[in-house]
Structure formats: structure tokens, C-alpha cells
Amino acid sequence: MPLNRDSFSASAAAGLLVSAGLWLTAMPTQALERLDDGEMGVVTGQAGITMELAARIDIGQVRYVDEAPLDFNQVRLSGHNGTMLDNLKLTLDVAGPGEVLDYGFSELARRGDQGTLDPNHWQVADAMNRYSVAGEFGRQYNDGDLVIHLSPVDSGDPASLTDYLNAVDFELAIDSIVTGGQPTSTTMFENILLQGYLGPTDIVVGNTDNSRVLPSGTLVQGAETHISSHFAITNGQLDWNVGNFAILFNFAAVGIEGLRLHNNRGDDMLGHFGMAYAEASISKGTSGTSGQDGLSIHNVDFRADLDIDRFKVGGHSIGSVYMTDINIQDASFLVYGH
Image (tube, rainbow, N blue to C red; front, top):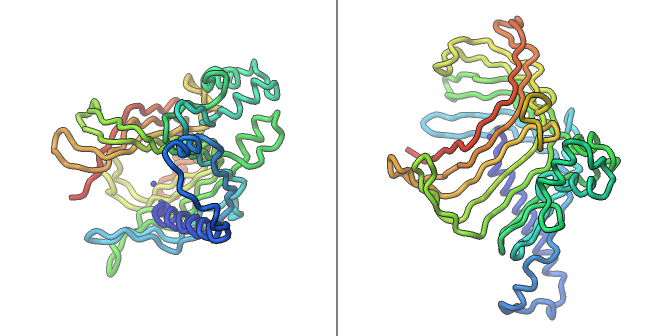
């Protein structure tokens, strides 16, 4: 979670509405005609919208207030070293019945099928099998699903996997996370920096009622929004300044340097092209234990390897930490107020 996504989403939505308004204003009156149900059926599943994105986002402070505030100070989302976050292409489609659209690494599967990439490469061969649907490459959707796919505008040499995987670079920086406000406050984290690369990312707003009871006992209701993303963090750091912050951590002045998150070793590399992976579904939920209604985050799947080159206490390194095949599956959360 860090960056105020609500603010970013609101800004993006406002820009989209303004652009749509200008476009409609410029259209001749004769073009604005009501479509009947039959005509709408023809429109559904046709070519969608493509947007090329470029931005650098700076936020002086994000404050969450309960009884006391929690402040995220000097938040920046950009490309590496403060450059523009760019080379992003967002395609938006409303799927027709059984329509196959791009998903995950389907573009690399397509290149393997065309011979642009070596079809015998173990990851490419897996992608060709994994994303193959009725003679196409991607994922098959239900009628009316809203499908958003994020990928690079320019992925360099089409025969280079490295060019594709490193096409979209990002950097998230936060000066400090402070709780308590005035007159007393506590700095929890400082000097947070995450640099890396964004792989294919998909957001699917379902058009099908998928109500059911999860193994946790939570009743999820209505249609679901599904989010999945491949990414890699190549350089990360933070300073953890709070003692007794949680039961498991009773020390202060902890620092992490040389953090990397990837999927380059172990037994769980297939299908990820060396990138970490996260996915989750979101919908309304009702707890089977407390009866509380809330936001259900379920079918959570996270896969990665973690490297920390320097784990520091009191300013001195006490060694390195490496975790292989971190695998969280079928986790679920229900979030509600109290």
C-alpha cells in the first residue's frame, strides 16, 4: 500500500472526464445517436481504448487521521533517479462473450509463436502453453468484463527478453512515515526508497456475480475486481527507528540496504520470467465469524525471492538475509471499521 492511490485515481479520472468532454464537444451533433440493445451487442468486444502514460508524482504529505494522524511525508513516484515514469501503455476493453485479450506475459508467448523469441526457451515455451486460448494468446473473458492491461509502449529489441522486462522503470521514495502528530510524534520509518521495473499488470472488473463462501468462512458477494502484477525491485532501502513497534521486533535503529525482490532462484521460477508476482481479488464481504460487512481481499497469491545485502542494527551491518520461494497462497482479509 505508501502512495495515496485514491488521490492518484481521482486525478486520473478527472483528466479522463475532461478529455472525454472535449472530444464530445468537438463531435458533430449527428454522431450522437442512441444505440439499441442489438447495436450495443455489436459494439461490445470491438477495439477499445489505448492510452500512453507519462508522469512524475510528488506529494508533500499524505495524512490518515483516526484519533491521531499517520503521515507519509514527501512521497514521490517516478522513473529511476527522479526521471519521468513513462513508456507505459494502458489498454482498456469491454470484453465480448468469450473474447481473448492480452493478459500477463501473453505478448512474449505471441513472440515465441512467431519465432521472434526462441520457442524452445523454457520460460517462453511455458508462456506459449500457459496463455494459449483457442488459437490466440491471452485470457478469455466473460461478456461485459472491463479489462485493463498495462504494458510497455516501446519494449526495445523484440528478440530480447531483457529489453522487455526492463522497459518500464519506477522509483518510489518516501522521506518519512510519522505517527502521533503534535506535540509528540514518532518517526517509524525514514529514507524509504524502492527502485525497480514494472512488468505486465492487469485489472479486471468482472461482470459476473461470483458470490460464494471462502474457506475462511467469509461470504463474498457480487462481482469481483481482480488485480495481478509482475514486478521486480532491484534496489531498496529503509531506516526503521521505532523500538517496540511490534511484538516480533523489540529493537530500534534498524536499517535495510540492498533490498531486492525477484524470482530468479528456487523451485518456483516457471511462469514469472524472473519477476516477483502478486495477485488478489476484491469484493464486498461478510465475516462468517463476526457478521461484519467489509471489503474482502481474497485469493491473494504472492511469489518472490528476497535479498537483503545489509541488515543493520545501530548503524552497523550484522549480515545478509536471503529468502527463496516465498509463496503465499489463498490468503484472505476482511477490512472494516471499528
